[in-house]
Structures are given as structure tokens and as C-alpha cells.
Image (cartoon, rainbow, N blue to C red):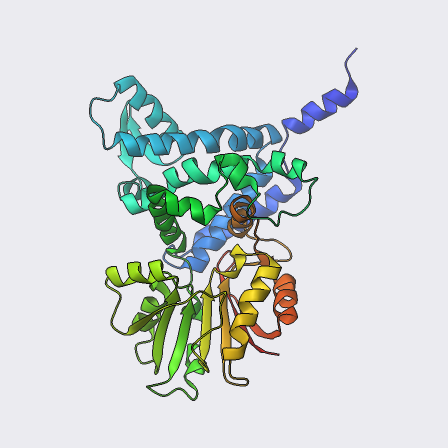
Length: 391
């Protein structure tokens, strides 16, 4: 005799995931598709989000499981193998054909005939090493940590991870090193990681495009410091700022650890950027600056460590004049972006750290003696700018 409960489960397995949403999403995709300007980032993103939502609603649980368990991992392996094959000769034709067919099935290339393929925009970017480096970085560093999350959470009895010395990264990569120590001792992976982060920021709205930049000009003379970029790496943000806001008054100071500052100097740092070796866990030496800026710094650290960073900065700030500008992801309380929630999971795996919601940002900053005057956000999935003052 058939088990009715089992039959019901099998029926769910092969039925659309959220059937009630399908008609509305089809209509939305059709409507957006008729008027979309593909050169308009907001319009293109809105259509893409609607298409993705339609796919999630339309696919069955079985199809979703196949996509998540089979397609994503095998596509990653095929792309990385393809990147390596591009640098080799004499590869087995049968092997190349198998990889190409899967890449075509996953939409990374286009099939034009039997064993004939055409490049897409994605395939063209994979020919550029600094873009392609995202794949070996993910395969050889991130994935081991990410896949170690379930066993790690079980071991710590499902508490929120908070110890960067004992988190999924160490378990997955079989190391006692912290994530950034691991990068320091593995220069190839460090290079791949830096290139990956560079790709991550490409095409995303920049804070200086939607923030009221001219409000920073108030009271700033040519000899005053306009921005101190704390933990600014080799100066990407300050270079972009000067390019977009060439009339901005005041000086631009780049701060990071000594070895990073040396790397910045070797990387042809523009003369208008003043390099300064500084550890943000020590007192800020540049006093009374108009804006102290941190990009993707605080999300690397748990709250008590962030408190230390923020309190070391506070004595340098001039009340009523200095601003703290924090360029970070802010997780929406509802309908969160998959890009931001993915980074949140990666931070959990690599650093026992996290992205934060607006509520969590308010709690963190207020407990450290600051107040948020406004959270500036452009589009869903983009980094926000959290504008703060001393409380």
C-alpha cells in the first residue's frame, strides 16, 4: 500500500517552488523587459532581480537541489580548469569537449554547432588574469572554509562565531593561521584575493556618486586635511575620489600598515595622495580632519574589536566638524540582497566576522560614542555610506 505522506512529499519535490508568485513575476519580467535600458544599471538590475525571482519561484525543489548541489560546484571546476587549459597545449580533445559542453549548458559560452562555440562577455573576461583569479582564489581558499561551516557550527553548539583564531577557515584549510596571516605566507593566493576584491568592486555604485560630497568642502582650506583613508590599501578610493571630484579642496592622506604603504608607493601612488604608515588599533595621529574614511574595515571584526578601533579614532575628531564615513554593506531588514548575504557567510567562514543590519550598525556605533546622521544607499546590493559624528 502506498504511503500517502511519501506521495505528498514526492509531489512537492516535482512541483514549482512558489507557484502563486509565478503569474505576477512573469508579468513583471514582461513589463520591465519592454522598456529596459540595458545601459542603465538600475533598470538592468531590476529586470535581473525579477528574472532571478521568477526562476526561484518556477523551478521545482528537485531542480533547485540539482542547481545548488551539482551545477554551481561543477561550473566552478569547469571554469577554473578552462582557465588553466587556456595556458596549456596538447590537451585531450575529449576532455576539452566535456568541459566546453558544461560551460555552454551553464551559459558561460554559446554553442554554434557540434563542438563549435562562441565567446560571451563572461568568457572574454576570463581571458584577463586579474578577473580570472577569482576562481582559483575561491576554489583554493574560500570553498574549504565555506564547506567547513556546518561541522564547525555543530562543534560550537550553534553559537554565532566570534573567534577568528578558531573558525571555519582554520578547519577547512587545515591551518592555525588567521586568514590574513595565511595570505601573507601564500603570496599567490594573496594576489588572487586582491584581484578578486578588485573585480568585486567593478561596476558597483561608489559612495562618492550618491553621497553629498560637496557638503565635505565646508570649512576646508587647501592646507587642511579633507580625507584620511584608514586602512586604504594602495589608495584606490582616494584615486577615484580625486578623479571624480578634482575640485575638492584639502589634502588626502592614505593610511595602512607599513608594508602596505610601501606597496602603495611601489604601485605609482599619485603625488596628490600622502602615504602614512599607521595601525588603526593605535591613536589616530592626524587631528581635526574633515572626514575619516573606512572602506570594508569594520566588517572584518567583531563588535568589541570595532569598539577599540573607533575609540582610538574619537580623540582625533573635532566635535561639530569631523565626520566618520564608513563604506560598508548594510543588510536590509527584509528582502536582503543575495550578494550581501553571501559576503556575510564568507565573512563568517574566513574571519568569524559579519555584515550588519542598520539596527546593528546603530547599536555598534552608539555604544562606541558615535551617532549616525544618515545611511546613504543607492541600489539594492550596493555598499552604503554610513555618515557619523561624535555623539
